[in-house]
Amino acid sequence: MARMRQDLIRRHLLHRSWLSHLLYPLSLVWQWAVLRRRKKYANWGRRSAFIQHPMDGAARVRIICVGNLVSGGSGKTPFTIMLANLLRDKGYAVAVSHRGYKGAFENNPHLISGRDGVYPEALTAGDEAQLIAERLPGIPVVCGKGRRSAINLLRKRFPDLQAVILDDSFQHVQVGHDRDFVLFSAVTGIGNGFVLPAGFLREPLGVLNDSHIAVITCPAGEPPEKVDDLSKQLERFTPQIITCPMVAKDIIDASGQSVETRDLSNAPVVLVSAIGNPEGFERSVTALGIGFERHFRFPDHYAYRDTRIISMLAEYCRRKGLRYLLTTEKDWMKLRRFDNRLPGLCCLRVDAEPLIDPDELTVLVMDR
Image 1 (cartoon, rainbow, N blue to C red):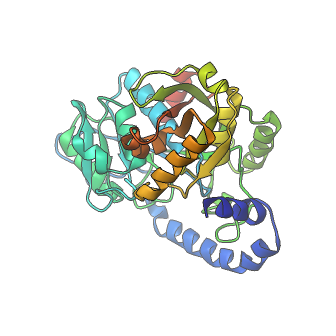
Image 2 (cartoon, rainbow, N blue to C red; image 1 turned 90 degrees about the vertical axis):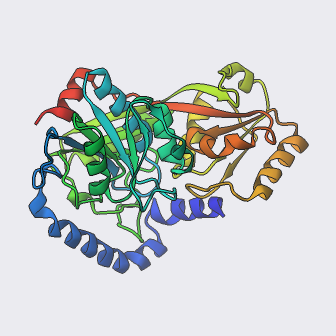
């Protein structure tokens, strides 16, 4: 089913076809609705969410958005992790707000980690939220789709907070943003240029302006001309564009130990993922010199609750004599509990490494 969905996207949403043109009138309706919603909150402009409601003893908080205009994966989670680490290293008191999609706290804002470590609640907060909490020890992470309530919770708990990074919140216009990073994947680009449901865009490109920073993420091995072409398309809407390679750092096994790349290069491997951009995962793996026998693709955020799926994966690896089952870091959050049933289960860790000086990026983020 997931592969059929990917084929549908590739044929009709990434390229213009009879189906995308047939759906185009519905795209106009969607476009009207999202633009009307943005206009409703336009008077909030670029002001921070809490200028109107200051809290006693709380510092002015910088609100940083990491989002996208396209459906599917664009590397928001690695970019958020990179940005939070950068600000902490530069001496800022920073926290992260995540929706906690399909997690226990999506409708009830809750801290899943603090400056004293990761809390047990992180295990039920959703794959991306748990990943962020584990990759950012000592940085507070709150879950909840109500961003205003989530940020208020952070400010009450940490009055010295200087910056909050909102992961996946470009469409959350009820909260004002001081800085917006809008991510695009070089793998999918802007698709066919149409808005949902006829295209790949959540909103028209026209919502971008000079204050937005477009970030082009690209896995290893992505042709440079694709990055250049996408950059030229985005230059029409914003002059601020950053290229951000997604670099495969290491591979870890169920015990947390590093696995040598050459071990996987010389052994049969199967891939498993439930992400928005499985092609990017494949390219990162291939760029490491690792071949794979098959890639099992599941819908984005698939929870792997059906134990029959785990049994199928285990049986497939046994029957084919596959030594390693390689997955993404996001899927690792859900699959590692089955490590005793999935011998050779390991995870590819990927970091965002933007092509910009860290000091310059810090100024870009925190300059008022």
